[in-house]
Length: 124
Image 1 (tube, one colour):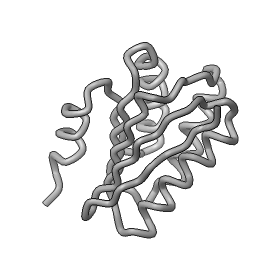
Image 2: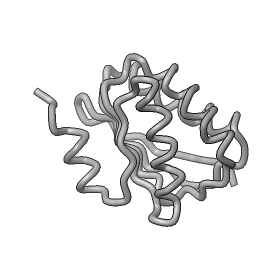
Image 3: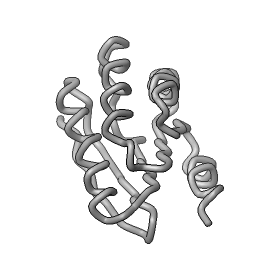
Image 4: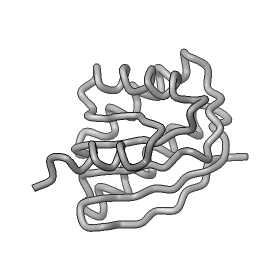
């Protein structure tokens, strides 16, 4: 099942609730770029993605390529927090490392409150 998502704008924060399976690299790039475009179009510089209902299936190479592409697309975004299921935390942390190394301020976590606290810790 492809990734679907619901978005809610709260001032500078875009909250995404996503579900499905990342069946292929292009599909996940499209999902990520859609979220980024939505944030930019609404003036949201912070994104909180609840991906606890997504089944991560990309291999390591595709995860690396995904992080590169999303970091390129997200240059106008200030911070991104992604909450994933515990069994996908290792993949999420790998994605985080690649994206951070490309200057995207992102954090992957399994706890929604901890992720939200980090995300909003420096909003003026």
